[in-house]
Amino acid sequence: MSKIWKFTSFATISSVAAASLYLYAIDKNGYYYEKSKFKQVTDRVRKLIDGDETFKYVTIDDFVSGPTQIQTRSRGETFKDLWNAEVRRTAQWIYSLGGR
Image (cartoon, rainbow, N blue to C red; front, side, top):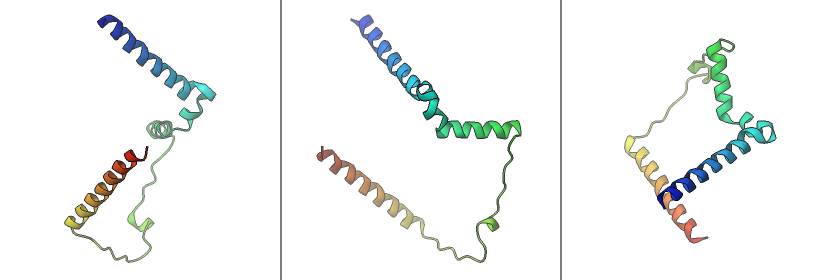
């Protein structure tokens, strides 16, 4: 039984991996692979390493035209906001389970 289970598991995982590779990279001339963020980042890094593209250095002056007032909040308020967002997200997830 153990050998059959191992073979079935291996065959299933291999089939899923092969189907995913085919649908992602080969089908439709690799449309999804060519449009993926992974490929865009890889190409950009390759160009930077090869010297075909250069960094554009930016400073804060590129974003801000004049004096700006910055309002800061306490760390406690920030953690409260994060906590509340997580509680809301968890509650929405729990309620979404009942709607099925």
